[in-house]
Image (cartoon, rainbow, N blue to C red; front, top):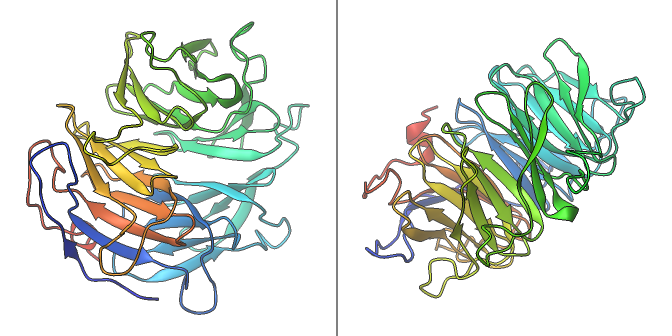
Length: 371
């Protein structure tokens, strides 16, 4: 595998390109030992600094350590009994266990490499089935949540293995059905947020089981609509961020219910558009990040509303391009991991505008997370 040295871009003090430290951390050669990465998709970032990348077409998942070591941790064989097919999402819990959704199954891979199935098509075993396992989330208690994109429901799996359906196709009732749930996040009070993607809704499920709609197709209500919510993020203040793939935008929904569009199809308004918003994340400083599949780029939106393109189709600028930016994971420190589906790779991006107005931070991913 080609490992790339750091490249420093040009800082422009405006809402324009602000490429910082960009490093390609995995390419199509995968682990370099015959296990290729094809169709890089969802990515996850563990507190240890390990990065996890799904190969949607190669049907596998890779781990990349801060030292640059690449390991395939699961392939199409799954756990040896149940195969992995059509992998969709990957998350990591507080103990370093990795969870991967695909087919009608969620797999757990322990730090020691043991692979097991934590939920399958039988769902809760009491009649609520899981079909089309898609979005994953983990809460502070290491409960795992998975959306059933075809069964139109969400399950919670506790560390002890108890499985509960937390919301079904009825969602919040008439006009608030759960239809094609793709994305899911959990806040620090254990409220669950899930997209009803076909109906252009976002629902909130409280720990007590109450279901409310927090956003619909009208978006902010002043002309900026939501079309095909494909990704969610939530910050420590319980602001929820919603990426509208076909509306090419991101909304912030505050706990009070106030809705604001924070980026639209015009991106940074300096000629760098956002097309087909695919993933969204937020760091501890309140900077929001979003990828554009069709625009082959990613943006950072600062709390002061300054928007910067942090990576584009040129990738690291030294020959490793970014095609179809689809996967995004953000570290609390403001490091973004961006995957390219058609370029079969992933990059670590440290924006110059990383911590509010801070500039010139030359730390790379492997320096923030030393081996």
